[in-house]
Image (cartoon, rainbow, N blue to C red; front, side, top):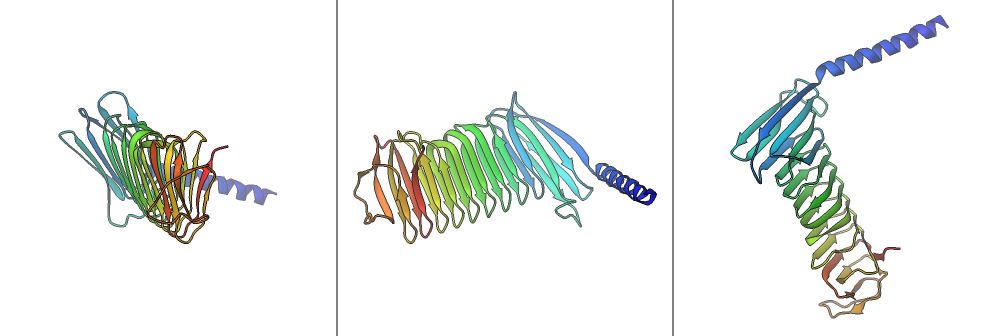
Length: 284
């Protein structure tokens, strides 16, 4: 019994020691910049998350958590342009080179984020937003009148509650989910990832959801007002809406292609795939 207690005590001591060492390695830095209207903010982070949200006033506030001495923060401000970069030193890897960023910017700022693996999160802005990553998870939400440009290799992309904006998403194999997204132009292109849209397609917008081999599912209410074209060369196509048929450049065949209008056809919708399944679904 005493031996077991000594082992348990030793385990607790080791855990506390490791936690103490880890805490000693981390460094917290806070950086502040004063900017004007329509400032430009760039954050480049090889490893670790980047979270950006809108704040009051005309200040940029960056909080960075560094996990070792193998990474430094390079910063600069030129005019109304702010740049923050995670500078990896010799021997840095995904653990020692990690930096966690929490950033507060003016709502009208233009933001550019680059991250290889760390998740990227942006909310409540209405400027230009450009996000680029490899395996990074992308989450953009609660935006209005913003231009959103996203490029990923295989990281999943989720857009939630975006209105009256321009959206362009390009992914090689990552899944893309759009929830309550509408705007003048909404374009999504994925080579093999799935595309899921759940919204109402707004008014007077152009929506294009395209995947080479991934499935496409678009869910809309019964009152949707759209002109829709859906086609999969080798996949199956399904539709839940009663459509007024329209002439197209291809032959509309049941199960592989359809075209028509719902309501006043206020928005244009294209759902295109080479071998993926397409389903235009009516929300229950």
